[in-house]
Every structure is written in structure tokens, then in C-alpha cells.
Amino acid sequence: MKIRNISNLDDVVKKINFVRAGGFPNYFGPQRFGIDNANIQNALKLNERRVSKNLKSIYLSAIRSYFFNEILSERIHRNIHRTELDGDFCLKAKDFEDNQFMLDYVQGTQDKSFFLTGSLLGDNRPEKINDIGLLENEIISKNRDLFNIIKCNRMQLSQRLLIIKPMNLSYYIDLDSICIKFDLPSGAYATSLMRELFKEI
Image (cartoon, helix red, strand yellow):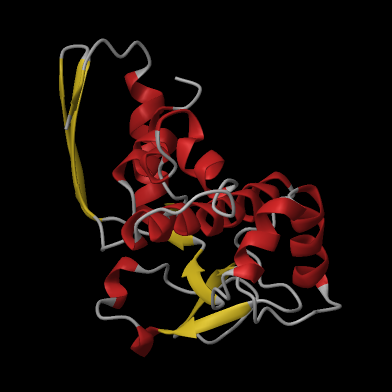
């Protein structure tokens, strides 16, 4: 991937080195939500019209992705996205096909085989009176209509890594351009990586 006309190449290189060592926020990319968030808007109309099973799945997935992104964004805002909190759910390395894509370990635990995750909300979400439960409740309270759709469609709770580390991340500079190469696991978004590297540049 080649990006041209970069004025602050040194800043980009610093960010590449940071991401290489520590990973980047595992946001769902904008393509998940459609043009102008159309998938979210269509999800809100599911009770008003019939759609194909495939479209319904896309719209419902967009809602859960939206909540995940909002929760992750709030954790970043509070600088707690790399810190294990009361109520966090961590997955073991053996739960992944290729743990080399994962962060080395979760801060706050000595066990390097665990990785910090965030919730993909579901109808079976337990009511948690802890740090994570309170944070999730804050986000849900601002988007009650969307969460009601999750409940009505009996979507099941699952987990997604908060931080992902790209493999084989390399670059070379050509005048005012930079060419970046990397590998990502299934479900991670190159747009989210590029956003991390080039925001505020």
C-alpha cells in the first residue's frame, strides 16, 4: 500500500514502530456500516419491513460492531484500553489459530497467554455491576433503540480482541511517499490500521 505526498514522514515512521511493538485498536472499519452508516439506519427499520436473511445479518452485525467501537473508543479516551479491569474477559492464546497476531500480554496480569477482549453485545449479556458492566451500560443507555434490536433478535454475546498486532509490518520511503506492507488476521481491518498510522498527520 503506497501513500503519497506525506509531509511528516518521521511521524509516520514513529507510529509504525509503535504499532509494530504494541498493536493498534481493533476497530471495525467503516465498510462494516455502509455509506453514511446506512446499515445502522436500515437496522432501525427492521420491524417495519422484511429483508433477506443475508441483509438482516449484515444490519444486525453492524449494530454490534457499532457498540464494540463505541466501547473501545471510550476505553481509549479514558486510557484503559490496555489495562485489565474488573469484569474484563480475557481469552487464552490457544483460543486463536495464530496467536502471533495477538498482543504479547495483557497489562495487569502476569500470564502472557491471555489477551484482553471487548464484548460483542448480545441478548444473553449478564448484568454486571463492575467496571466493564458500568461502562457498557453507559454506552447502551445512549443507544437504547439499537440495543433493543439486539435483544429482540436474540443475538448471542461474544468477544473480540481490543488490540491487534499486525505481522510482517514493513515499509520503505520513496521521496515524499511511503509504501507499507503488513498481514492481518481475518476480521481485522486494514482501514483501522491506516487510520492509526495517519491520523493527525
